[in-house]
Length: 185
Image (cartoon, rainbow, N blue to C red):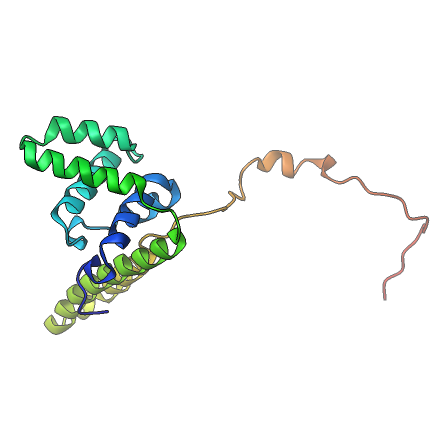
């Protein structure tokens, strides 16, 4: 997979499903939009749609709807021929089957993570070749960051949330068991 620089090897349908998943599944889009590059798509219209979604996401912190994408296309694309092609592609993305979305999400996220790791490793190799041993901590941080790319924080709890109530004297409600003295050896 190291020689595969875009999603083209996975086919057209995969790329259409990927765009569909990015727009429809908010958790997935939150994890992949920071690392996906429009150049990972082999079709120019897929690239344009991905770029529009990324720009919209960075500005409004959520993905656009299909209707919004159509409006953006009509307002931002001046060429009538390109506009029609993009609108047709958006329609394909909108109507693609949802079957296999877990596979599409997993495969695309792994691909993006690998590409990100490859970029970091190239930078790391440059630093190593320079002999800059003082940058070891920076190298470690870069690799760790590349490995964490696309990870969504799910279900974590702030242990300090509502600390006063947790440490309140009345936090327990003991039930008497009938033994007056308990001897521990």
